[in-house]
Image (cartoon, rainbow over all chains, first blue to last red; front, side, top):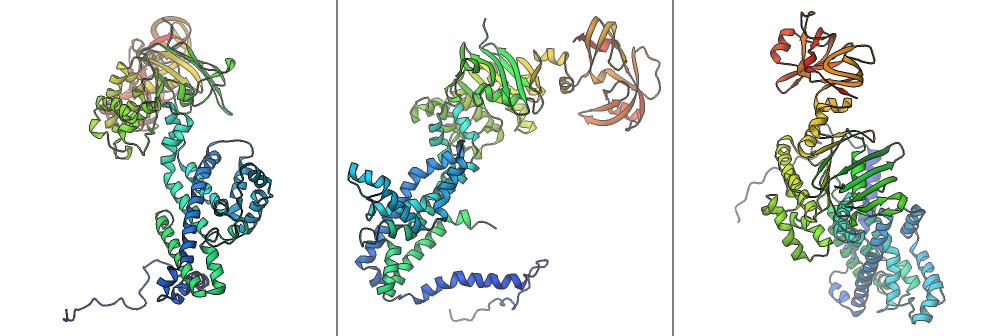
Length: 279
Length: 352
């Protein structure tokens, strides 16, 4: 393989724009590039400063596994709760008409814009040991949610479910309701039509919503630490572990961050058909 | 014999009111024929139970399906119906076979049993080899047949077809129309077909119910409706010139004063109809035995098959059919003044 091979000439520098493509004005290009750098550089920094050689050792530590395992389990459970409650809620919003539906829709989407810490405080007030519902739950069943793994799931579901509801509601609105009418003329009850016709039709929307909700739950910090606290092995999820590690062991924090970055990239790859296909 | 289907459908909308009544015997195919926006689809949705009546009554085989005054409403899923929708609405995530089996499964059959019962329906439609295919892979004609099989497989007591041939291209339409006619002839319960195409209606239906602006304007056997249209819409559909006036013997005087001579003796309100090919055109006032002669102006020419359809304006607006030879010989262009002659024997007069 030593014989030199002729290579095709490289593209001449400053390759011409295709004819007819107008020049991008500098007033737009400059801020655009600055914005791009602002978004991409921190991620690059994470990769550059990552302690690659010490990484295997850092990531196999028991605390990391504990946090990662807890994160995956609680985010998945929160997604499950969101699916169980969120899909019917989305159906209600998309397919029925009742007074106050618009207000209800606004309330459902509120956690999207609500600071998560506020959500955590609100959850404590309702589901805390002395909360409106929590007190009853404690005396009736002996279950207390705050500062437990179940509490983590509750906090994550509270923050993540609106993503799922919005996504599924959009898919339901885009799906032709006449398929449900066709199912009804064939003898399907509304529930059967929903189960056997509507659900399969909006499955891609539900999938995308679930991935979004899962990613949001995985990264959840504010509501979790407020409602469930920060107990290693019980309520200390990855984001909490990252934050804590930054105080004591920055290298470990970077390593943990790398894991979350990897998960985010995987989520993005999973959703690329839905979001990256815009021309 | 009492009617199997007994319907008086009244549906009030903001800007539109449907109020039609009709009935049908078992085995009868009824066509609701009318222009777009006449209320045909609304009537079909009311029959299917997808739209409740505002007032009126709907009963099939003696049981009430919808009666606002009695507070009765049987929802679509509890009515023994089969619907073929205009764009079929085959479930895109199910195979052709599972689409046909869907209604059977809703009746409580297990998957295997439902499929076993669905397959013969696909075989009857000549689609057994397409059983495993998704609707997206089927041609328009195949999808139409799957939709029909799906509607028939639940053994409905009322079969509803919404513009069943409208989505097909001209060639497929001919085949499917003949096939659909065969299936409808075999169908033992009531079938109601909604269409704006007179040919579909005439070929497929035993009886026409012509609906315009939410009202029934005429009912009858297809041949009868075609021969004796009662509105301009039907006359245009079946290609007849139609006039309404007052008869006195063989003379029918139209509201604007023109007089048509016919060979039927009538008195009182009457219709006069004649086909466009009964009209002869002349550049100069002809010496003719024709009793009806009118000066006209050519408004437009259109080639219909091997005939020229000439639209004429004047004291008596009418349509005339000419052979291309005749049209060329007369050198007709829009604006040309002509004389139109119609023999009394070629007109058809009947009481209004």
